[in-house]
Length: 130
Image 1: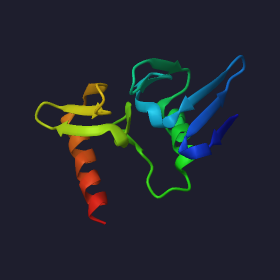
Image 2: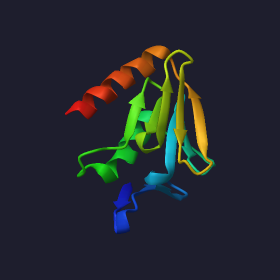
Image 3: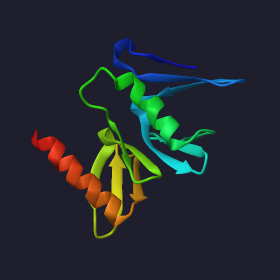
Image 4: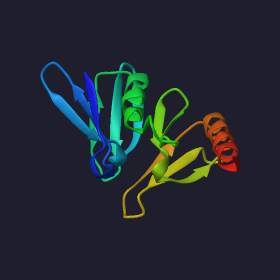
């Protein structure tokens, strides 16, 4: 069972597993990387949490607290990557890189296929024109 909290604009997801309760502050999630039936969640200030669930399930959980809002910060790029657009700084199609940063010394430089980056970039630009 999963719950959510919106106190003082802190967006948390609660994941109740058989032997543990995991609390994830969604605003601190930089990205999620699929690893077969597991998902690695990387936090912007550092650290990683591996969950025994698919990236599709993690994506659904992370989007829940934002369901009543106009914009959802999490977007899927390709089959194995989910990013928090809040931290998006740079896309380099030629080098096939995507940079996420909090402008406070914490960043991730991710390798992403040119096809996936171009598709995301085009969708991003179209959504900003509305």
